[in-house]
Length: 385
Ligand code: NAP
Image (tube, rainbow, N blue to C red; front, side, top):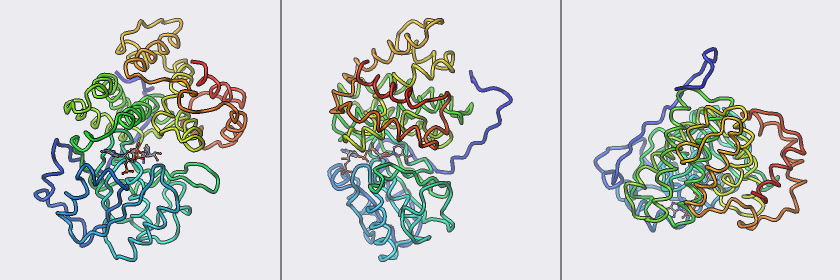
């Protein structure tokens, strides 16, 4: 059942062709994917070599130019360097292999290759004038859903923020999802990326841009993560679990492509950029403080989370039920929702609150009014759960 008001109009755009199959990367030669003469491969430093993804792609496209220098939370400088190499090597399509970091860089590269200029010029919405190069996205984490979003989230060291290139022209043309590629994910990355997908889907449910379609997908995605993340963390080679977590992450990407993210992400960036807390963990630290507030607007809509996690729904105090339910899930996955467990001190919270409060863009999808004091309280609550 949808909780959307029937007077609300909505649109739905998801132009990416999805190919989802266990072992599909080994079938790449027979898929006849050819988007140009010479591909530009964008990947991270290690994992695509260790899990064999890069080798399998190179076997099919031996003339590809490879950029394998993408770091976590990639910077504008990395995007500019990769964009220049793509232009210099005259590649005419792009393949992104890896987690959200390489996939995001591949999107910026595709835009820079045809439009020129620097990454920084394209922070904002729909600023690529010329059609970017076509992109094949091959995710190897189950967390961001970047393979089906029109966003690239890039770190700008000049102002120590993460900024977004949002452009419907950078939706990948094809997303190739092979759950086998995620088996090599270490425990901490499985945890963090799973929490990122959960956060995206939960935020999608409470976004001002939620639609009946995004609600369906987000609900399914949350349930799959609640069910399978604990199992996969116990048994990393559980292929059925890996399959459903990658699917849940894909759904979360389709969700945020429609709804965007909310204040949870905006808050999490402070911990990632200042204390190197992994992206998904940083988001998860804010789930209890923020959803305690979000549930006052959406108690019936979020009820399934409480009941799915085996807690009783208190109609008068749904925020208590939700907190108990999330704590139960966090215990199941052995995740501490306390900031100090992740090396975050509380000595800069005033500054973070002030910065976030003055950045109105971060509140565009969020219900509720947030004073500077309220934002401070939210940061503070991550130390006291
Ligand atoms: P990531 O930063 O891409 O990768 C994290 C780590 O996991 C890296 O060390 C990476 O290795 C490793 N790794 C990746 N796949 C692996 C595998 N199969 N086996 C073993 N190790 C593997 O992580 P992510 O969480 O997927 O991406 C986070 C980034 O995506 C953030 O910058 C976030 O802001 C962004 N994001 C974007 C969107 C969007 O819509 N565009 C949505 C959400 C988040 P390598 O160093 O070798 O690569």
